[in-house]
Length: 423
View 1 (cartoon, rainbow, N blue to C red):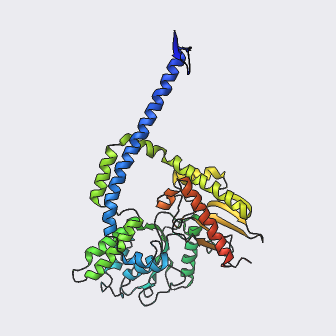
View 2: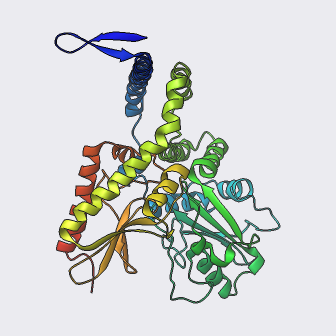
View 3: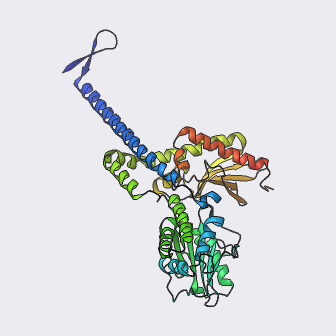
């Protein structure tokens, strides 16, 4: 059968049945695609309205003494010190060892036979704010020769010293062995924990502790164990200690914000309803968002490499996985693996620097220095988590290009200030 189709201009031309059917299929596919896009747009509009309403409420309750004094992710001066302050029985909170007992017994799951909290000391504390042996939080009972080591990691990379002896190269294994070497503690009573927001410590840091389950107790997380501990602490505070309760509540509010647990029950239920109304669109977005992330991260590294080439020498991509760089990006964005990858580049004097995508985006001098970025528009970019607003903003090309310019300008400024001892 032959169909006649009006041409552009005058006259008609002939098309076959097969061609007509093909055009129909293409038409309906395109129609289905545009309808799907339209539904996505409508869904985003309704969710955006919901977010605006609750953002206003969050803004009204935004006051927080901790964020007034520190960045949210300040590891040492904020998180380590406040947690150790609460843990110390001698602190001014006046709760003696109540918070400490909840933490050790219910959070760390260490029983009375393993660790005696009577007469123990927490370092740092209200009176001694200095770390002992570079350990972020140390809970020790010298009399019973028992000790708990907690390494707190939010942004910093796990340190690794390849020049040191076996068992002292990785950070966690080194803390364990150096503590054991003091002969102040029984080896079976040295417990090592890793406190973090999302990730596990790398294998090099764990080292000889990897299969030592007596001493290595694994990771504890701000979004799970720390939140649970703080809630239990608040419930134990008597009504006359209102100021202590308010302080801990403000810290809990900060942790909830950091770990994306700050939505009220009402907001969560309304969001659930919006999702229920758009299940097909949500599934479409969820199924394909890993590809959106992949292209955002890949475009970022390509753009950064191009811009670094203008100023620096021997600019090249690298991956600790020793695989093709694009495959590393797939593991980071599709499987949320935290892999050391990024760009190496040389200064004029031959010193090699890097920008790394391990954990939060950072840069430094190979085997010498490591720095986080300071600008608030890039200071929390993390590709494996892909959770912060700054990371999401890289999906937009203009925002990504702005982030690359900020990165290069920060590196150039540090050089101009002679901040680094590069020689």
